[in-house]
Length: 248
Image 1 (cartoon, rainbow, N blue to C red):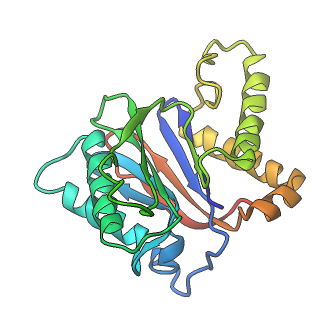
Image 2: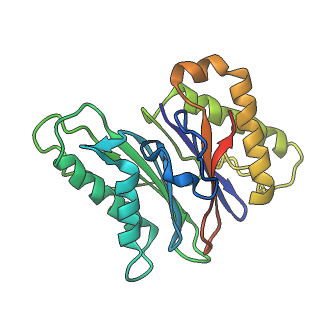
Image 3: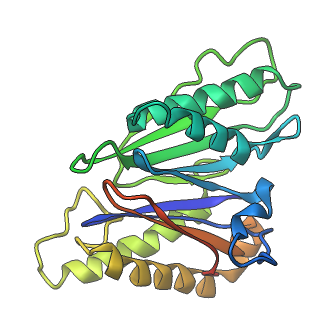
């Protein structure tokens, strides 16, 4: 299974993706060149956004990560696209790949989150590419705009593991809110009470580690964990990405 999370901060958001099969790169300056089939997080700098993937990893030998990368590279030219346009570009690229592949029972899911401009609010879109197991059946592949405050993507989309991990953050928010800083919103249960990214990242990564320490059997059964990819995204800035992060 895949587990990816997006957590909002006061000055951006944190995106994380697990990688159970990921291995440390022999070249520490280019960790992204390894395990292409296990890449679940891609970024784009114009606009500042991330694309998180789960589910099907290949279409007739074409890795989903490479299809997404090609869509993102093409979307950046000749001008800065919107976050919605990025989501549509990724959806179309996977749609074409799905139409040209043999029937399968596997679907692919994408979560596209980012900022359309330097002062724009965060936007989030979900793309679900269903299995091509009968007829055409793929004409409805298009991004669906979702609440950017609570996105979680897993395979399948709704899983016990995803819910349990997010519940850990919900408890943490309840504890923070007891301080009465006024920044916490009941409508944003997975936000860290207005913490900036500099403070959110260590707090969030520790909550993830704590969850895996206390739920090792569930994680093993669901097939999540390994070496993670972590991205910090701020409006108008190129996302900062780290590979091979030990969180579980």
